[in-house]
Amino acid sequence: MWNSVSEFLAMGGYALYVWSSFGLCAIAFCIEVLIVRSQRKTTLRRLRQALLADQYPQESRQ
Amino acid sequence: MNDLTNTSWLNWFRLASPSTFYPVAGRLIPFFWILSIAFGLAGLWVSFFVAPVDAVQGQGYRIIFVHVPASWMSMFLYIVMAAWAGVGLVFNTRLSAMMAQAIAPIGAVMAFLSLWTGAFWGKPMWGAWWVWDARLTSELILFFLYLGFIALQASIDQVRRADKAGAILALVGVVNVPIIYFSVKWWNTLHQGASVSMTKSPSMAHTMLWGMLLMALCFWMYAIAMTLMRVRVIILERESHADWVQNLKEVKG
Amino acid sequence: MNAFFVMVHRDLLLVMRRKSEVLTALFFFVIVTSLFPLGIGADTALLRKIAPGVIWVSALLATLLGLQRLFASDYLDGTLEQLALSPRSFVVLVLGKITAHWLVCGLPLLILAPMIGLQFDLDNASLETLLLTLLLGTPVLSLIGSIGAALTLGLRGGGALMSLLVLPLYIPVLIFGAGAVYAKSVGLDVAGHFSLLGALLILALAFAPWVSAAALRIAIE
Image (cartoon, chains in turn yellow, orange, green):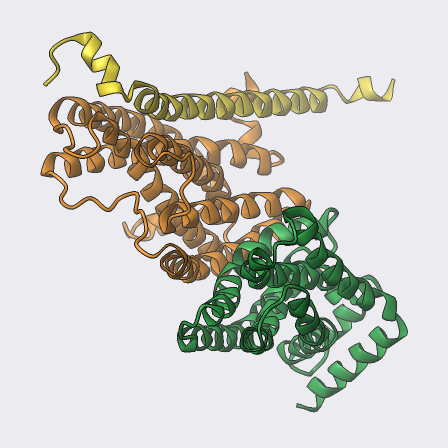
């Protein structure tokens, strides 16, 4: 179908539009994954800190 | 609670408890990622190396292989989200509402991608970054509906009120989506006569349909994986007081 | 049925004691419609073309302004809870409140709209169509809007949030209402528009009070 790599990348002159579209989808999905991962880390950290705080009640009274 | 596990179909109701669902979801996530990547690779292969050049639109038409899956998913996810929200409202189950809350951002991203790829398709083909055709305009309104749902839930501090209010909004939305789509189609034909349609192609080669289908399956598996990931975070946040959360490996350290 | 009329009467009485709130929304309607010619230009042919859309959008926005009052004051002083607990059907009471809102917000729009229409140089047939579409459409706006008002009851940033929720749902009414006036102005048949507007009104009447009542219960509890 494609005679060369450069022809494939050029997409018959529509390179900007085709690759922007596919690229945007890929980037959007990657960003979403990273955001959810970071949310999970933050929540776990908060839970860990709350657990630790419960284990040492005396410190809060001092 | 454990006595109910004898009959296999009653096992599904155990999954309605966040503590049971959390580890199950965790085990399912990699499975759906693998499916998504597999369908994605197959879909991209068909999109770029099997589907032929379009007679009218040249190579530029290949954008449909992401535009159409994103559109389908944005509509499908809205219905699924409304269904979960409705179940949560009727049966008063927290986890169902959490599922709806998890799906909303993913659906919104799909709607956004549909609009953006639609613009990138429209510019070379019809000369304008935005075309007020029925499908794109309906997609824009669907995007607003997603944003409304997310904004409403974000504005309500009491969690259960947020769940139920969101459920009502989602159900009202799901009933309105066909009405909105029909009215926009009507509006389009009234004001533009022979309208420019983004997906009206005289005949679509079988390979093109296969490409769209495979990419749609890729997006679907991705959406499921993301939903499960998101709902696990939501469960952790909402059930933070529960013993089982505090006894989790990832929390205890 | 008696409860319905009592509710309407009570809300109208309360509004009459605070006329300024109502008049503000109406003045808003007039001002907003005047902004469009100022922003676009006073070419009469263009104004005639954009008039249906401009008047209808301004009506939407003015209705939204009025909706914020619909349940808010009763919620703040506890009356809403009493209404929900009363032996009368809560749905009927909510319908009463919505009707009072329409009498106070939608009906005056019907009176003002012809004058605005003349400012935009609409012909008589179009003006008549405008009035009829507003007559059918403004109740739908009040009904659907009440759902948004109920969902956002007592929330900070309520007004903007309610607009975000309600405006997408208003779009079919806008399309058929403004579309009918435009179609009439170019000589097309408007029977279809009106039957669809009528259908929307019936649907809204059947479901909106019930959904708003449910949303109010969720907000109150």
